[in-house]
Image 1 (cartoon, helix red, strand yellow):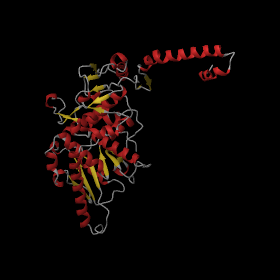
Image 2 (tube, rainbow, N blue to C red; image 1 turned 120 degrees about the vertical axis):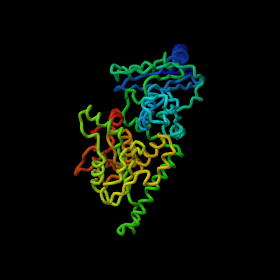
Image 3 (tube, rainbow, N blue to C red; image 1 turned 135 degrees about the horizontal axis):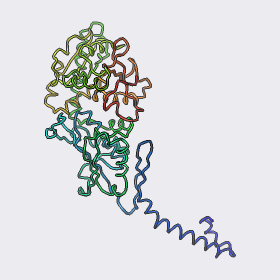
Image 4 (cartoon, rainbow, N blue to C red; image 1 turned 180 degrees about the vertical axis):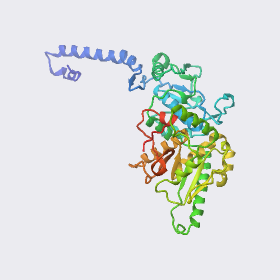
Length: 436
């Protein structure tokens, strides 16, 4: 019996009372369901387990009540710039899993690994643009300021597990528990314990890439990077003007950015890593890097080579010597931009170098370096967004290479990020299995 039949009552005399009774019963049932049961079901959030991921449905609220925003608070984020970017993205994705907004975390301006009291906290919005992040990432992840919290004492603590017994499955189970109503009712979930970089990884590379896309440097840092890139281009013009064959050309001299990991602390770390993993393609000497960069197929000379190296940690002052003819190497001092860097804290210096490497015509790095790996991820994403169908080879738009892996003819191996990876492990910890 359809409710629409009720409007026919006036035309059927003998059936009037029977039909009216049936209509009345249906109306009463509909009202009961709408007023009693619907608010109960609408107040329940759904949690679906699917392929080791948790999809938390947005809750619906009665129209006469405001939606209460809920937040996730993460510990201070530490270590190198790109470790911090990964840790930040992992905190964002955790907040998304719990159907919450991440409270803007503290980053670390200094590079201390063990002396926690020496870590200089710095607000996220001193490095990256807060409003732009929320604008680009709207509908995926969001950030909030502490001023957005209505009751900062309405907190429940989530203690992250640690050690080998704290498995991926246990971590996922804990997150599932904190998406349940008894925990989810609190305005803030505060995660305490280890650095978010060390949290278990439950998300595919493409999700991390979405978060990284939303990170735009503040103007103070991007302007400094502009100055460095402009100086490199300016020197390229000078080189071209001195070359009789190129002086009439309007094409700029290309520049190659080489993330040259030969500092003492890195060499100690990579030797230990090679022993532990029983592989030999992690460390590269200065001579090996120079030779392989000089053997890049299709690299037309002259070319400017910018050496992205931690000058304060570098003990070898001969990095400018021994390069192949046609390659013009420059580090910060020779380039005349050292003053731009030295006045800035570590995090700013690293952010400037990252941006310079990202804008280079060709990038060459180490596949076990988080810095290099994230540059390649950004360049890969850049090509995909530009509609490039060919990502590997010397004739692609923004080629990248790994100098620690031998390619054809003792050249560095072509390198792009595998965007279909189910986690960020290869980028977080390095790999000699690269996509090209």
